[in-house]
Length: 210
Image (cartoon, rainbow, N blue to C red; front, side, top):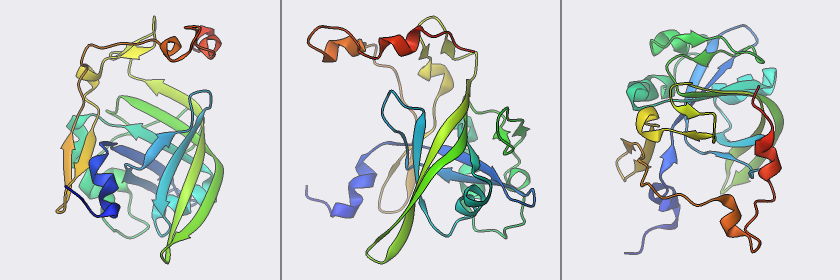
């Protein structure tokens, strides 16, 4: 079946992240973002695509800090309250009944109850316009990364998706369909992609975690 080109997003299962920021006046903000991706395996950069007129953009532009919180399915009811258009001075932690988690390297707090937290400093911001609609590509440098001990295996760097139940979504014409992922029991090493069977980035994983 042929679909309209703009529906490409509805066919890509997307992560649901909750990005927390703080304004220059100390107001806490949270917004859900699904257009989030890491930039290549060797780097510590993440990219967030955003509309321009959002409190999250204003706060990141002013403070150059943000936290990407990775929620499980148990936080699905936080998506709509934090996506609502409310006055700039509303504390969205209180609005969504979420508990702050102190951050280590940035002023913006994380969100308690998530399975991972990426504290980021602004690396660069790129403003573009498409068909008259302004949008932003926000590149953040991860300066502190934490994961829930209960889901992470420090021996091989794997994590238990069955236990974490990462919140995901697909789209239809009417809205968002929330879901999660499951492990199908299939594993291949990175080296399998290379002729010599060796992962050229294996040295990165030899460093001990802090």
